[in-house]
Picture: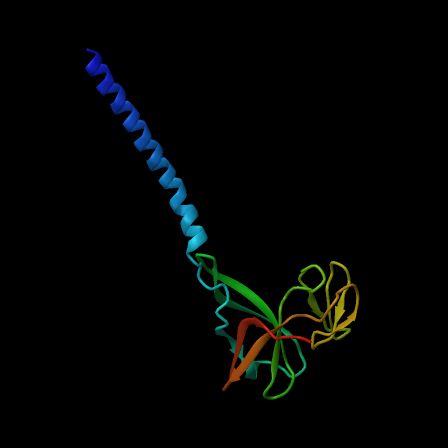
Length: 162
């Protein structure tokens, strides 16, 4: 009988150790994958078509809505985004990020004053994104743009400012 209890006891010890090892592996594998596997690139810098340049009036900012695919870690997100575009001449268009550089509020174009106005803290920007007044510490962020034929293309990358 002592031999039988010892066998049963050793079986339960082995089963408990095996179960603990499986639970430990189940917890360790995702953590190891997170630490060791590099996530997909967050910013590919690819250009996205956002509109027809011929539809834009020179010097008149227009808010453009477009769809983009963004990669966030391991998740791929299809989303609607906006940008303010200003056609400066026949071949040049600038695209401004839709968030104020002060605290990230959405700004809008004021036709009467020919400026962008951030309603949160009254920062005022020129049509080219430069700061006219307010607490905004720097000009509006500009996307890298390209004109290919009649198509306006923007990147998710910003133009480097000095």
